[in-house]
Image 1 (cartoon, one colour):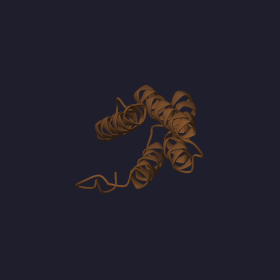
Image 2 (cartoon, rainbow, N blue to C red; image 1 turned 60 degrees about the vertical axis):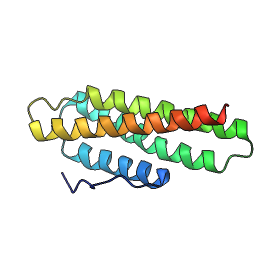
Image 3 (spheres, rainbow, N blue to C red; image 1 turned 90 degrees about the vertical axis):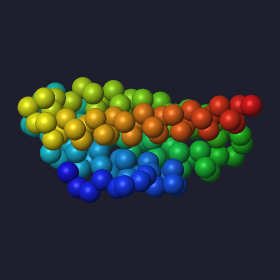
Length: 122
C-alpha cells in the first residue's frame, strides 16, 4: 500500500491532507461488500473533513471560532477512527495492518487537536 513516510509532516495541514489521501488509497483496496461500500463513503467524508476543518480554523475570525472549528476537526478524527474500525478487512492481513496504521494516525491527529484546543482554553 504505497510508501509509508519515515516521519510525519510537521505541518498539520499537510499531515491531515496526507491522512485523507491515504484513506482514499486504502478504500480502493477494500474487499467489495455492501457494508464496506457504505462505511468507505463515510470514511472518505470524515477523513477529508479533518483537514478541511483545520484549514477553516486557521481562517477563523476569533479565538472562539478557532476553537469551535478545531473541535469539529477533532470530532471528524474520532469519526474517521470509528469508520476505519468498522471496515471488514479480516481476510486481508495487509489491509488490516494498513487499517491499524490509519487508526493510529487518526488517534495522533485527535491528540494533537486536543492539545491545541486545551492550550487555547488556558
